[in-house]
Image 1 (cartoon, rainbow, N blue to C red):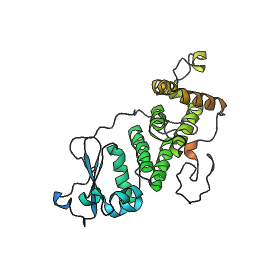
Image 2: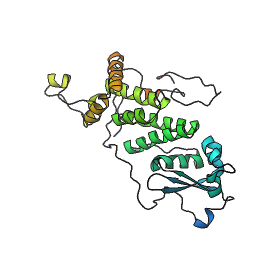
Image 3: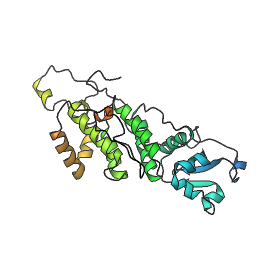
Image 4: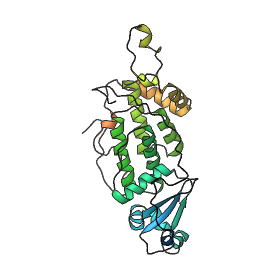
Length: 267
């Protein structure tokens, strides 16, 4: 369900823990075991997550995209000798987005909150492995998604816990949540709050109140709670939607690269 002008739709999807199946369901490319130890083979094996999900990625594009993998796969490193990199702490679905981007330079459209969470986690992988172009592609897809759907408060909880403060991702998620709290508040409050009490025949939007509990959990964080309180208090209703901001205001920029950042709302 998409929003009409001035009103976002409510998504029925909630964030769930990403659980990978024991078998490979196509997220990694299955290749013959005979190739795994061949240093001339164009693919590198990357073992991801606690369940050791295997991904096979084109080695040269991966090294060109990331200085981390370039260093790992350089001559003399154990990863180069084994043609294998082990990343036990990385989430599999997020890493699959990285694999697809390395091969195609594209990020698939985000269709629900679970996919949005994977994209957020993938942005953190891009930060970890120094791949700004991948991060920027993810930001563009997240912005597109949030032009239609409300921000789940758990997104900001995860970003605060797992990324550095004041990163572009942190700024976007925070700005977007503040905007939605002020301009599209229905999923974040109970039906007996504020103006709902004054009008018994008020039509309650579908999905109203679905994010009340996760928002309360988020506000329990003293630093976040204070920031959100003052930001929502000072933001005027009807302001520009950060998700609709043009240019690369929330992009990461490589060292020495110049880019004219546009403020949210500009096209």
